Image 1 (cartoon, rainbow, N blue to C red):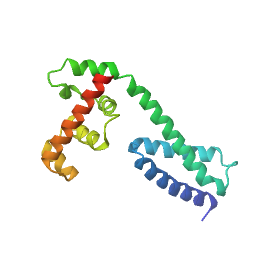
Image 2 (tube, rainbow, N blue to C red):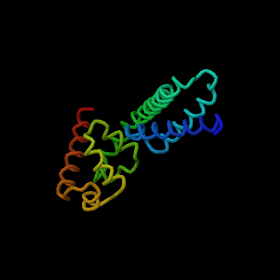
Image 3 (cartoon, rainbow, N blue to C red):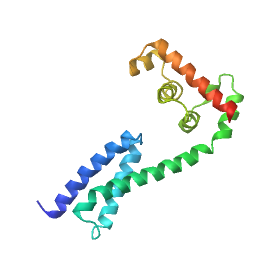
Image 4 (tube, helix red, strand yellow):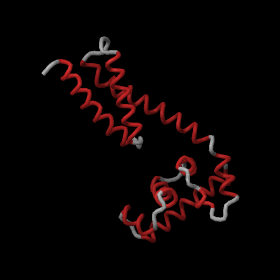
Length: 162
């Protein structure tokens, strides 16, 4: 096998490892793929300055830094939705039915427990029934209703405090 083929194979292996790590950090699949692609590109651009001993940690660090930067950028964009979202909530008959933009939901749920965020997204973004959500999460339908109620209460409390 040629040295270039060995490097490509090694980079693909590193890419798969980092991809799994990014997904575990809740990166979107597309974002993780872009980050891996950009990191591999940077490896080829800096090939003369990197060696085998520092390539793996460098690859992880560059990819994670890019993910952190991307996350910060998205958080800044989401924060600008605040007023618009709360105006919608105040003037709607069924406030949660008017929320149809994932960024709005993400912002509303930023300080909410993970289990509540998940159920809220399934209900109001993906428009699933209580039974469908229960089936997906392997819980009782009544638990879905209870957690959804708590999620809504959590959001309303944030609205009052904010």
